[in-house]
Length: 454
Image (cartoon, rainbow, N blue to C red; front, side, top):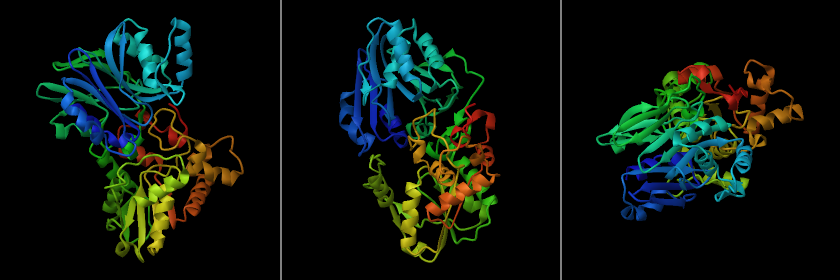
């Protein structure tokens, strides 16, 4: 039940597949379901009475079905991964060259399943420890791993710590999770957070440290700004607290005259509360997110349907919108689809002005390290579209567009604002965002905003 509810608490991180693997003493009970248009719990509830065992792992993913179950010379195990393997094909070719008659069973739309590829890397070595260490070295991008054996769970954090792994403890039990928000309602308490590249072995008796943490970390800033859950804490910094600080910093650098501050639900709300607290301008909810039937944000490929979904989930409150000057905080502007639909909705309700404040800088690059990004092509990005519109082509260097002190940056923001039909548009600057996180800029990945890899 802990695996069932704990996995469910990661539902905000994926909309495609959900899975669990439980060791029952002799074999794995594994189940994977499509959750694109329903909740994780609803798909697995009927199976719970048939599942026995006191060790398991679970995953919700937008990429491939997992956990996978494997039988190799190292024994039986189940494996789940989070990350992005940029050199997947090269590693596969290396496996084909070095291993006789190797083949991959799991495919995802014609591509190799990344989690299975990791299992092949591990199986080529003489121990789980050696396999996990080799995987860390071979993989370009990022990869955090949970590996369940009949004896316990190996947890390996990405070598640069781009995603977290956090250990919880309660009487007679330990767990490890990406999101610490899973702990409280299951009676776990924070016990330990893995460092970058650290590997541990978890049993009901405690933690065995298999490989020490590395010195360098580049944790994803979007954990706090966007995709992390508000009640989670990473590197000692709570997500909601960071968003309050970040919103307050937005307000300090602003002087717009408005009647109300609001958040674009759900991840913009914390930033908006921080803005309101700092500016002393009232916080309100001029529209509500309708969740009974639009609770899952399935990702249709058709842009028109995406626009429809963005619009249908938000229901305006006419009395709070008509004639009002409104400022909305959003976690980010990626394509601009949701903002465009929201602004159109507000003007149809007679809003006087609509101002947008993005809680992070303009997104100029597609993430190379994680699969949580809502866009797969740079040409989808609102910032890139504006740059090409201004330049007439893709410029050789984007550096000037990443610097808020330049004329190019201001022209880009103005272009985005006009396209989205906004009264004003401002983005958080990267320095205040990093300060709001509060762990030091050298530990945070900012590639999406400035293209700097390390």
